[in-house]
Length: 289
Image 1: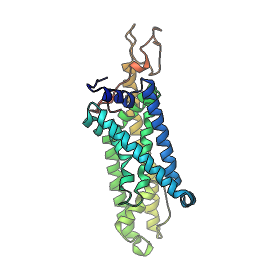
Image 2 (image 1 turned 120 degrees about the vertical axis):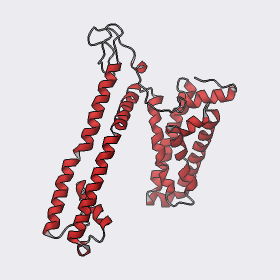
Image 3 (image 1 turned 180 degrees about the vertical axis):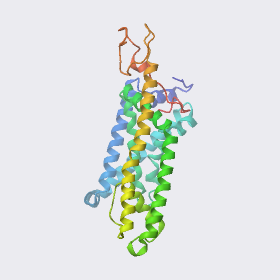
Image 4 (image 1 turned 45 degrees about the vertical axis):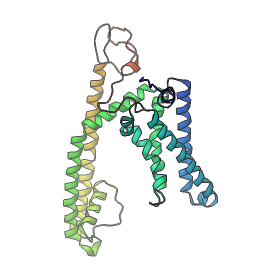
């Protein structure tokens, strides 16, 4: 851990960014409780009956939570050894977005409900409770998604072309008299149909239009499995690569599961799971939570 020359900053850093001390652990648990309570307040405000009877109290509670989280965010900036790195990190951005909605609510009606972004801050529970296995699994999933991003982009681009074609066809075939008043609205119908949602607010009336709709539905069932297969394949590759990193110190053989404690070939004890964490390839600062 990087030490500050200023004792107060160092003490605040240990409490706020660390979980290895009783004070740091207590702070993080108290923070999680405050986040959950603030979310309860936001949800309660959206219920008309509760808002009518307790609206003023809920509003002051929300202002109090926002003030608390604002102070916390400013203290994090104050005691962080690398202020810019924290501010630009995942948690730094989430911490900022968690307090902004309340401040912009007077100018943007309904923005206050966007404080549900605070729910993302609860992901700190993995770090607080030292659930290393969950962190490793989430890292594997994230890397799989990153590896599949080009294939998924190509897939969605293809789907975008298809819905544009089918939307244009149905617009020409059905026309405004059957509810297809524009190509964008027809593309909306194609998206709803190809994803098998089928709202039914716009439906083809002609025989040819129903044929196009049937083809769109069948195509939807055919292509829905594509992104799942892409991500599953990348996830499988990532898991195989991850298992290859867990090597036995005795026989040097790899291929062990993440949770394995002993070598499946020679029975020797493996390194502790928390010593096998494979970091995500990014430039996020190690002090950014």
